[in-house]
Length: 456
Picture (cartoon, rainbow, N blue to C red):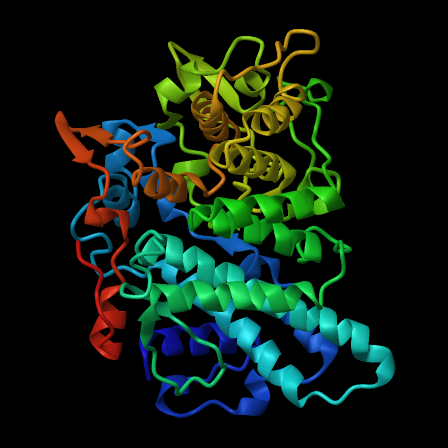
C-alpha cells in the first residue's frame, strides 16, 4: 500500500464507522467502504468538514501576515517551518495540506466509481447528474489546490516536462501513485470541470455545493494561475453574467467582531461557493499574528475595508476579522469580488485599460464610504494593470490566493516580490523563483511510493 492509500483507507473507514483493530493488516470489506445509493453519494459530498476545506500552509508562507518571536516559537513545527520557508518543512509530522485534498479526491472517486454501477430510475437522472458533477468539481478543486503547493508554477513552455502531482482517478486503493507531468495535472482538472459544467445546475441550493456558476468561477481562477488571461477573462465574464452581486460595505457594521453575514446560512449573495482554510489558531485567533504593516497602511481612511477587514491595535498593528465565512473560519471559496478582479486583470493584459478600470471601479465604489470614492483612471494599460494588482492584494486578504499570486507574479520582473522574515534578529529572505516556492512532498509518500521529490 502507498501512503495516500493508507491515510485514505483509515479516514474513510472512520467516517463510515467500519474501522477494525487489524484494519491495515487485511483489505477492508468493500461493501463497507462503497456507498450505493444517491443519498449515500450526496451525503459523502455534503460532508463539509472534509470536503469544503483547503490547504492553509500557503497562507502561512505568503506575505499577508507576520508574527512576533514568541508567536513563532509557540507555533507548531509545520507552521514555524512554513513561516520561514525552512529546508525541513515537516519534521516527520502529518501534513494536512497533502492528506485532506487526497481524501477529497478519494471521496469523489468513490462517488464517480459508484455512479458507473448505479442503475436508477428516469426520475433520478437529474439528481444523479448533479451528484456526478459535484464529484468532478470536488476532485478538480482538490487537485488544483495540490498543484499550488506541491508542483511548480504553471508555465506553458515547461509544463510538459515538469512533474505534476499524483493523479488518483479511481477509488481502487491498490493502484500505485505516479507523478505525471504538470501539463497532465492541469489537463485533468480542467477536463473534470468542463464535464461537471454540463451536469450541474446553474446555481446550487446551498452555498457548500458546487454549481455551473462555481465551475466558471473556478476555471477563471485556474486559468489566471496558468497566465492564460484570455480564458481567465472569458470564464470570469461567464460567471458574472450569472450573478454579479457585490456587497455594499456601507451596509455593514464595521465595529462588529464579524461584520459579514454567515455564508453557510445563505445570506452572503456575493459568495458563489463556500470553502474555508483548514483551521489553525495561528491564522485565525492568535493575538501574536498580525497583518503585514505595509499592507495595512495601504488602505485609505475612506476605504471601508480598513475597518471591516481589520481590528486595529495601534501603531499600524492589526488583526484580521474580515472573513466572508461570517465566523472564525477563513473563507477560501469562490466569490464575485475575485471575478471582477480577474476580469479586470484580463482586460488590462489584453490592452483594454477602459474595461479594466470599469470593473475595478464597479468593485471599489462598493468598498468606500458613500460619496467619498473618486473614480480611478489609468493613463495606459500598464497603469491599469498596476492598479488592478494593487487592489487584488487589498481585496483578497487571507483567502488562500496570495501564495499562487506571488508565484505567478514573480515570473514578471515588473512585479517580482522578495519576501522577508525577521526572527530572533535573523533576516530570512525568499527571493523570486526560489525552489522553496514549491512545497516538498511528505517524506513517507516519497519513501513508500518512490515518486520524485521536489527540490528544496
